[in-house]
Length: 227
Ligand code: C5P
Image 1 (spheres, rainbow, N blue to C red):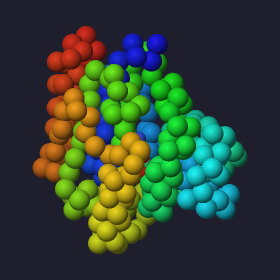
Image 2: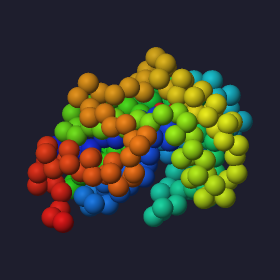
Image 3: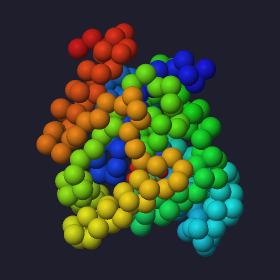
Image 4: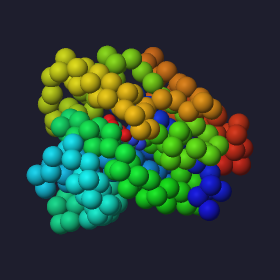
């Protein structure tokens, strides 16, 4: 079933604009969206709340298998606590990248992510959407941008959410997170062999969205609604 539902995967490092681009592409296509990073953020957040050592693979995996999570519109709840904003902090991003390096955690989230693929289609945003979770996806995008540009975008995004962080600290954190994501033994961040790589350093969000939709039109001509 999952393999027959069309999937567009959008992978890339943090701050590459994946989230914004994926949301807009999903809106234009009228498809569902999977923000897989949110799932890793939730696991990291829940583990920290439970006082679990983030390197204790068995304990963190047990948390991942039993996450009491609910998505309601744009809001996310863990049990009775709303965590929509709490999981967006840099600490939560870093915790996510630590728990994401644990194979049992990735395994625990695998089927859950695949279950998001339902008609009419899915746009999946993450690090391993095209390589591991949806290897049969007809359209795969790998979105990149320089570390400085990504830090600038992240800074702007956080500021808009009222979160004030120091830019040079952000560059260092982004580089540290990239390093961990690219060098981990399971599902490292890398473009799928058949992915279209887009460097967005000098492109606007609209230009990136257009390139992605062009690719969708080429591969799945009937998927893009007439404009
Ligand atoms: O995309 P986002 O910044 O929310 O992801 C947070 C972290 O979750 C990433 O740094 C990465 O370590 C991890 N992640 C992952 N695989 C995914 C999505 C996110 O390992 N598919």
